[in-house]
Every structure is written in C-alpha cells, then in structure tokens.
Length: 137
Image (cartoon, rainbow, N blue to C red):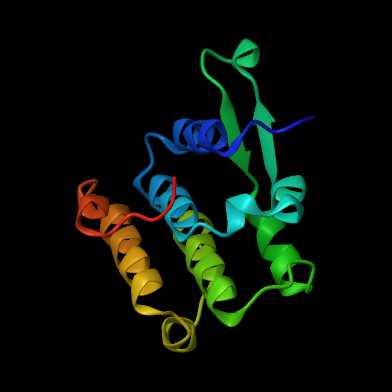
C-alpha cells in the first residue's frame, strides 16, 4: 500500500496514538525528531496505513515490536543519536528496555529537549511539546 505524504502520515499516526499518553508521547517524539518518518525502510517495515474508508479517519499504526527487532538486528542502520531516539520511543510506547545513560549521552540539545517533552507527555502533560522548538511537520 502506498503511504500518504508526510503531513497526512503525521496526522494519521497522531490519530492512531490518541488516547494513550505513552503512545502519543512516542509518536510525537518520532514526529518532532524528524528522521524516522522520512525513511522508507522504517515506514515499509513497521507502519501500516489504514485509509479513512477502513475507519472514520486515516490511521498509521506503528508496530513497536517490529521496530525493536529490526533495530536490534541491524536492519535499521542509523546514527547513535537516531538509535537513541528510537530506543527511547520504543521504551515509552512498548516498554522495551533502554539504557538511559548512554542513550542520553548521544543526544544533541534539540533531541534531548524532544526526549524530555516526550517523558513529560507520557506522564500526562500534553502541553510539554509547546515548550520545545518545533522543527518537524
């Protein structure tokens, strides 16, 4: 199935995550980080798009377990910072363990701000993203 353009994909992922602070936080982290949703291998591997005719609104379902397996098996080559962001998102969304010390040490200040906003969001603060500079769709 062909995926929609990025703005529609972002909204479909948000719609799918809506209602769970943890899922919302993980999806927002990927959106704001701006790398993963642009990668065709990531999308092919772990995002299933369901157009509006299958539900009332389009949904982009993320398979966190598939992503975890792919990352652990070297199927998603990426930088240390990109891997850290994905590992943190996987931990927030699906409880996959992440060693925070090394993960956080790999983050630049902007990515760290996104991670902190995601943690706040997962704890119930939906306003957390308003405090970070947005550079993603």
